[in-house]
Structures are given as C-alpha cells and as structure tokens.
Length: 421
Ligand SMILES: *Cc1c(COP(=O)(O)O)cnc(C)c1O
Image (tube, rainbow, N blue to C red):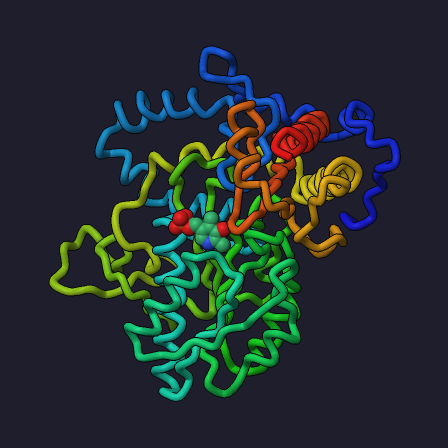
C-alpha cells in the first residue's frame, strides 16, 4: 500500500509536490527557529539524528513543571509517574512499533538498553546450553551496537560472529543464514542501517534466526517513526530504539525497549535496580525482579525527558504511520532524483539502495570533498551530516520536511561543491 507512490520526478517541481502533499500542514506543528535564535534554518536534512522540537514542547514542559512536578510533587509518583514508562511504551507500541500491550518500556539510553537486552538474551541462552555462546552482528552496524557486543562478549567469555555486508546496502536474509549455527545465541541487527539507510527484511531474518534456535534483537533507531515496524507480526524477540531521532523527543530523550511477552519472565536483565524490582517501595533485603516488562527498568525513570515524546507519538497517530511512510518515500525519491540531476555531474555517488522499498528515510551520498562542504553548508543553515570517510547523510523527517526544503538543500550542496572545486 505504501509502495506504489506516484512521483513526477521528471518535473522536479518542489512547489507542486508541497501543494499535493496531504501531510504538508503537519510541518506547521514544529518549531521553526527565527533570526533571534540564530536561524533561519534553510534546510534541515538531519532529522534522523535529532528531530526538530514540536511547537507545543515548551508549553508542555511548562505545564509539567507547574502541575505534576511543582504542585503534586512526590505524590505524582503514585498518581502517574510510576506507570509512565509502561503507559508511554504501550502507546508507542500501538502507534509506531506494531507491539501489543505490556511489551514496551521507555527507559535508559539506547546503549544501556541494548546492553540489558543483549546480555539478558545471551545469559538465558547460555544457561540452557553453554555451547550457545556466539553473538552475531554486522560490521556496518552503528558503533555503540558493535562496542556493546564486544564488551558483552569479553564479560561473558562469548565469541562474536561478524557479518560483512555490502556497505552501500545492508544485511540480507542469506547473510544471516550463512552466519547462524548451533552456537548462535543472539543476533543484533539494525532494521534500517544508520549509514546506507538499507531496510532489512525483518520478518524473514527473524524467522531464520528462530529456525536456528537463536534470539534476535532489532535496533530500531533509524526506523521508529519513519517506517512501519511490526514487532509482533515479525515474531521479534527483543527490540530497542531511540526517541530523539524520528520521534522528536529531544536531545538525550530515553530509549524504548521491547521484550516479547513470552520471553519476559525467562530473561533476567543484568542491571538490578530497585525500580525493576517486584516491590520497589518494600525496601526489601534483596532483589526479586518485577513480573513482566517492568523488570527491564533499572533506576528512577526519566519522566521529565519523556514529556516531549508524548506529543510526537500523538502527532504520528493523527497522521498514521502508512501516510508517514508514503511521504518519506516521496521525499527520498525527490531528493535522489535531484541529486541525480544536480550532483551526479559533479562526481557525487549514491551510497544507498536505489529502490525505495529497500531503504528508510535517509540515504548517503559520497564525494571526496564532503567533509569541507558540510562545514560550509552548516554555516549557511543547510544541515545534513557528515559520516566518514566521505559520506553526506541526507535524512528526511517525513512530518517536518517540505519538498521546497529538500530542493534548497540539494541546490546548496551543489553550490558548495562548485565553490570548493
Ligand atoms: C543513534 C543510534 C544509537 C544511539 O545510542 P545512544 O545510546 O542513544 O547514544 C544506537 N544505535 C543506533 C543504530 C543508532 O542509530
């Protein structure tokens, strides 16, 4: 349904595309900086690293400060905050992740959540069969994912099996099948690759991992809020993701973690804190994990940092994930077509899948001068990001990006390259 998106790329007419965009008005719901705040931003092409704030964010934070925090004070823990990590997780699960109730929690940073889930999965597997001590991950995965796996392997005496995918694409089911064995305990993969934007076939890979008796952890950092995710339908075991990228939660907003219901009481997470215990205020002598998804919490939940995210989840609910995906495809198709016309003649190459069905909401372009070009662009209020060795990453956050903005951005890239030549 989201795949057949007609786009008249031949005309490359940004104004016409904006006029025909059913989600165009959603852009007005975001805060657009003015001159007084160092703006204007000409083209924001990095919503996949840090989403723009919603316009209501400041107001919501002020209400929160005066109301639940300032007035209800400590009483607010009982009245609402204790329930917040799971309540917000449930809503995120329903609107964005394809996850039924009681399987998603909002807590920690993504890195800490990856540690907890991968380590928990490995421990459970090794307890059943000590020979299942191999973690599978790919060389193109995000650094924190790779580093955490290195650390967990060192800590537990486990080994790592590296998949070596095509850097301009990503991990395919056959790559995973070739890496699986009776020793595989857990597989950690990104659903949408952070550099190439390649979108993995999560259902097929999950199935292959299960046939090998292993567990899979999906990293959804570059998926959540930009492409439809169907954790329950995929049969996923575990998942994690950021909320400050396409979910606009703000810098350092907490991660989400998903644990399939049947696994929750089988897995123990490695950071035993009082908030994940069965009776946090019982002040008990030793740790007994809470039942269900709550056991994956560790310490006091970051309630303040969850507030901006709530409004974004509701905005996505209003737009609908399928419509968000359809616009994302139109935006990336438009940007890629403009890049073919304006940048390819200057030696720029696409380092991402051509087929929109195989990518998320960002892609990477390569050119030897992109490091210098990015510095020039940032000064001009055109904001993509640079990924070594010479990649310019173009991220198009569907609800906050216009086609005119994309055109202005790609034209500015062309101008910078011409000046640097
Ligand atoms: C952005 C990102 C992270 C970030 O982890 P933090 O702990 O929030 O810094 C992790 N994994 C992937 C794949 C990412 O894209």
